[in-house]
Length: 296
Image 1 (tube, one colour):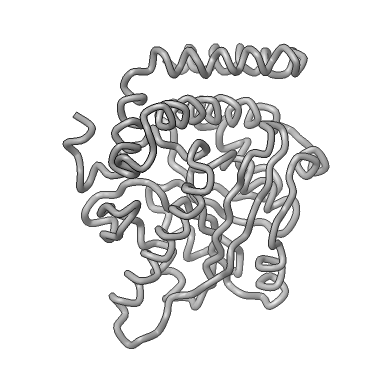
Image 2 (cartoon, rainbow, N blue to C red; image 1 turned 90 degrees about the horizontal axis):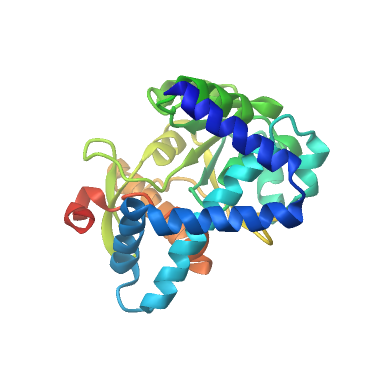
């Protein structure tokens, strides 16, 4: 199976590198249309998520467009991922602008322990590379792929420019090690978790499990959490926006303090998604822990 994955990836890479953009974008748009048309499983998941999150606040045509754009964002993110293999620092920075970067640079100057919180939103694979090129080396948590050969490709791409990849399995040890060295860490906080791994928070007005990792580490190491999200401007250029940093409050009740911090992360993530919902990864069973029936 690895050979099949490698063949498909190599073929797609050849297409991305050798095709002029005017033609390539038409091909990518057609590919995203094919995925939307034939990937019935994930299209159903996305529709269930949108029905749960928005109910009747947006109509069926709007939901359909969001799902179509979700597939398009995924295809364009993969294409850019391939372009970034072996890219120079200048090539990365040419397509990225930063908003509110002082939120991060001030923390770096003050030698604070930093946790960068984000989600599977926009071109999230570019986010860590751009931050590493512009501001600071960092360690990011990522899930290993089932294909060993594809996992090696993914890891090689992610670890450019002194970005250390921490496997999601057993990542806590690596995150602690990084924070002790004052090396910033990056965490994606928007996916479903098991009962024993997540805390229940409100997300789009519905209960969902949310990882408490950032909050726990912030509490333990007095680390500052800074939200950062990347949005596409035109599928070639991107904007990374930093939001106001925060830490776990100290009310004397550790559990409540951590829960409030986790809820704040969920609120910020929801705020970003609502500002431009077609760039979030709606294809994931985000509410499976509490609403498994909607995916059946």
